[in-house]
Amino acid sequence: MSTVNAPHVPQHTQNPVKARQLAEWLIPDHEWRPASIDAVAVLPSFASKMHEAERACGATYSELSHEIQDALVLRRLQQMIHTVQLNPLWRERLAGAGILGAPASYAQWQDIPLSDKDVQRDFLMGARPGMVVPLGRGGFEVVASGGTSGGSPLEVVYSLRELQDTYEIAGRFMGVHQLGRYLQGSDPKWLLTTLADYQMWSSGTMVGGVLQSVPGVNYIGAGPVTAPVLEHMFSYRGPKALMGITAGIAILAELGAGMSQEAKESFRVALYGSGVLPQRKRTELLAMYPNLSILSYFAATQAETLGLQLDANSPYLASVPGLHLVEIVDENGRWVKEGEEGELVVTRLHAHEAPLLRLKLGDRMIRRPRIDQPDLKTHQFEFAGRTGEVLHLNDSQYSAARAYEALRDELRAVGAVDLDEVAHEFQFANHRESKMLTLYASVDDVISMSFRTESALGPYGMREAWLRALPRSLSLFNHGEANAVSIEKTGYQFQLVFVPRHAPEIERTAVGKVPLVRDRG
Image 1 (tube, helix red, strand yellow):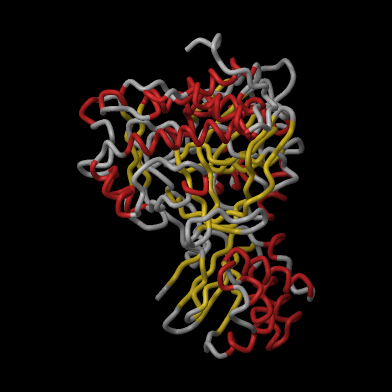
Image 2 (cartoon, rainbow, N blue to C red):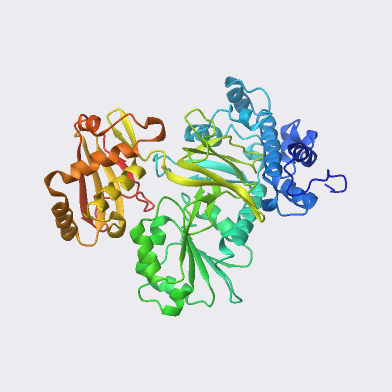
């Protein structure tokens, strides 16, 4: 496509008409509404449209105004609806929701039904009837997740050509807007991952594809490491960043004990890939590695880079412009307002052949103000916990993440214990039949912590702390429905139990993750 006849649209335009004209020029009508499966198979990639937008506006895609980005993404979403309507299963699903054509606006886009893991399984596993371009044509990659939350494996299908595009887009964004400020100087720069790339049920393949595409760094796909292996890699000259699952990052404080000071000082960025890194682990890591910044790399098997923490002092996650449409929605699938919490919903924009619309990933997020800086314009959100991390007390639902924070604050306020400082890991166990809710916390000295806490609280103080904390942890849609009196009437007992590190009371998944909640029926 030549930019000679492109409409003149400056990168900073806030004119929605000009932005729409540019989007319509970038994705012309014959591509916008493909006539057949054969036509879909040869559609120009969305990445090519992003590059054309950059050339037309004379700026990088991340610098383009929100109006231009929004117009192009909406045009792409409309194209996706036209594309999936070539597939009978998608056509039936959309028609059942009253969707007969492409949405004219983002408000209409929100009418499209949400997809869950069952839809993903029905459309993209087995015979894979939801693929627009059949698998038999080749050129696809199947990526699998072990289903650590639900217990059932889950697969998703990507076009290889589009997968490589997304690796480059996300890798370039990481290099410019996240790692660039930390990996500086003339020495070689290193980016390592301890994700297990050899396991089918691992996202190591996809994340590794992104990390390999970060410009100016040397990549090492190490897999799980021992202390000697970590020391060997950290002995290489130059600053280093390392990405792993939360447990894999937490253990680096132990693995670095015998490392030289020079090697420790070369460790600049730790990227943890899921969940929440306990404050105790952060403290240990920062004590071991004096130049370290700890950042979140939020990803999923269905989306290799969803949100990147750009500033260690802010928990906000920035989406990679042009990679996915990231939505934070209420129970009706409508966008929540800034500052409100909702469910994370993702639509991959680079998916001509195997699209999956409005997929719920099982995470809860808080919508935050978008970034509107000269060099970066994108959306932000903040992790609020897994959707399944809910404490069910009879008919009321409490956010486990908020329950932990509220109980931590209660115990800290009375001088009993600071769970953030002493706990290596923690997990709620909800025994519904016996009506016992327990927070297990692994600590170095069980006897000392137990005695200190009981002495500070007295015989009834722990229960009172729970009764004050739980009402503050009601989910957004249940707020105000319970108080200390109504919680008393549930008949539940509450306890905080300290256990040694690696104790069996705190259960782990097959890949070493610690779910925040274990329901026991």
